[in-house]
Length: 247
Image (tube, rainbow, N blue to C red; front, top):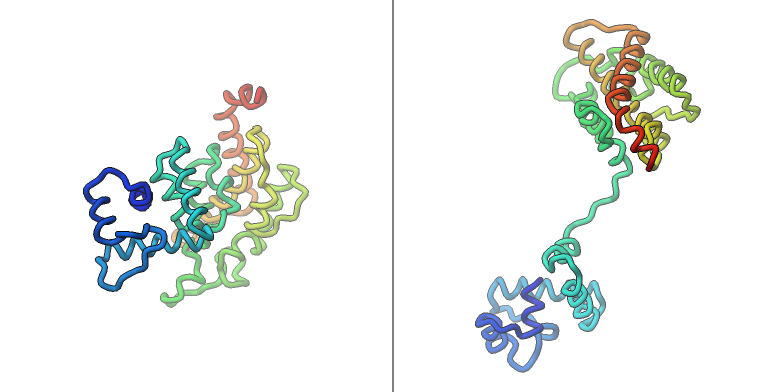
């Protein structure tokens, strides 16, 4: 991209002068046609030029765009990268997973759950195993079932919502992300985000305990563990509360 701009400016370079003499001659970089006999690197320049012309709608618009990159404080290459890189769909739950108050292992499991990448039994189709939920034994174990369609996990989630005084339904993990998505950095806002990561982690931990150790606790002990982790994280960050309230 920068070389296109240098060719346009006729920068003082032996290679630029050679390009003007051999490829451009009496034309310019924006109008010169692509020759099949050209070198691969020159063909890549022309393809990039054609993309810019198509995107911007003309030669003057491309020149204006590149000139704006030169005039900014950011490096030219940084602007070019931002323009050319493939941009994905914005992730709605990124602030939930990246909440700094969450414990790293909690954030990691929440991230996998939101991506549906946990090794739930419905994904182990290549192994001859029972795919029923380890908690209720009534339905196939899947991400949607574990969070929170299962009678066992939904009861735990209901207890957590009641304890936190959350009135929204949030019967799925995605609806919980939207329901708990709050702007701001107050302790209340952050702990609501933390609560979801704790619940998801405890459910997955208890599921693995049942699978590999054939032992499963009742909902009440897991709920008490949630409360312990909740207060532990809150107290750890209490030193930040005066700063948060001041902001």
